[in-house]
Image 1 (spheres, rainbow, N blue to C red):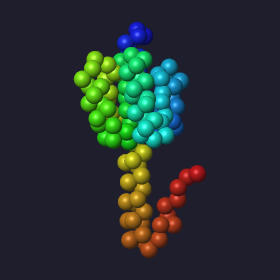
Image 2 (image 1 turned 90 degrees about the vertical axis):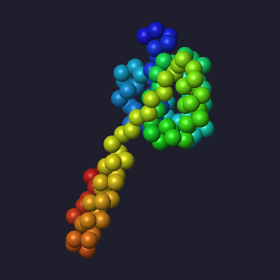
Image 3 (image 1 turned 120 degrees about the vertical axis):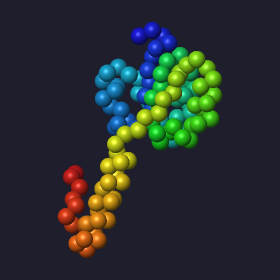
Length: 110
């Protein structure tokens, strides 16, 4: 890849493990301050594209807008299915409790 076409993904380490194997630079900040530092580093190291997980996308709006006034990196948000599946599990559990009085029928693997 050319220097201006480097790609980075910022999000949860477990979610991004496979991207590391593909050669994409992966960052897993523990909090918003670390995420801000990652965005600054991406600008400094001339990354072309940054995929930013939804958990950081909203809170880092000012930083994204500042980067948007520059040529790179382009910051694009992404989400994963974990949030949707968590909501679905809660809904199913509530329905089971209402229907049977217990959630014993819903067991989580692992």
